Image (cartoon, rainbow, N blue to C red; front, side):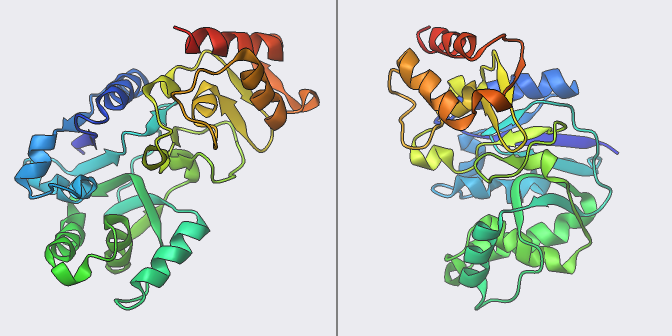
Length: 269
């Protein structure tokens, strides 16, 4: 089944997009198609460019049987092991987000499965789903809901596969680390000004049963700006606050001190 993989980020997130494309090619051996600002604007997406994921079928030929989307704030850490044959496949969003957006959408209808569409795959039989979502975009009376909500709503009428969360592991959701994660998704951090291209440098990884800390986490620590100059004391304090020494499993480093020294070295480059 011929598949095309897409992402977008425009000029604002160019560095993130470049990191994503490099990592994705390394993991999967195929290129991501990067949708430009100009392509977004050609579809009338001047201010709401994140809706471009709904227009993918308008950018491929008839020989393409599946499209796959990745947000530019995703960090691929393993190859994609499964591509669904169903019309639409994605990971369910966290309950807090789902409940809020279901309530906001309730005047239009019930949403059965609320998906996070930072990563999804869709086969050609999903074209009708996305045509419905595009009509919602063009309806000025429906501006109160985002594209993810409308995709989830119209997915009610299609056979969908609920993917394992490893395909779209949401950083900050509190999900346990299993060890087979494929994509870490730093969803929403760009809106807080905390996302920085340096998050995709990972000279180390520290794990415990219920969380993961990488250099990515140090850049995106809640309450701090990624533009701050982090002292070694702040870095090691952050690590120790999250991971008591008795629960740390180290990969590629031999102690916590070494971890924060590596991080400090990276931050000072």
